Length: 187
Image 1 (tube, helix red, strand yellow):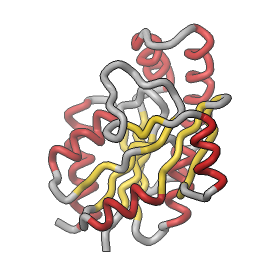
Image 2 (cartoon, rainbow, N blue to C red):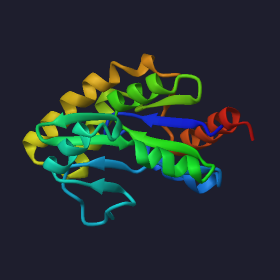
Image 3 (cartoon, rainbow, N blue to C red):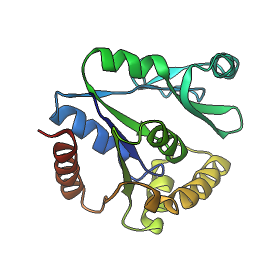
């Protein structure tokens, strides 16, 4: 049976960097592409980085129960994991890796408690995380304020996950993530 590796963290903690490293290190892994209603960034590709949907289309998929999990993170900004995406990757015989926000990670873990490992990527400190978010320069002042508030809440959830991986020195965090995944999928 394929296993699920659920990687979560507050925005700016390094989860995407770690997920990309794991995908390049293990042929057995496949990335679960999430659906979202947020605006596509210039470098992002539909169906590869996210499935970009309008809020109306996302709500219609909710009504049809097409999601394993979903959340309205900010007003009219939804994220979710499509059942069809998980089925697609299982049909390829891959272990699935998720780069997902905290509540969604907890929901996936709830659905697949025996076949999943949830990893919380923790920054060295909240102050370093908030500085990383400010240095991105991708947010308006209001958007940045909301992200920092949300990150503070998400940091308080770390103990709800199977493993906490501190991303202080990136090379160490990448090596530790490889070790955790190797043990879990049994290579």
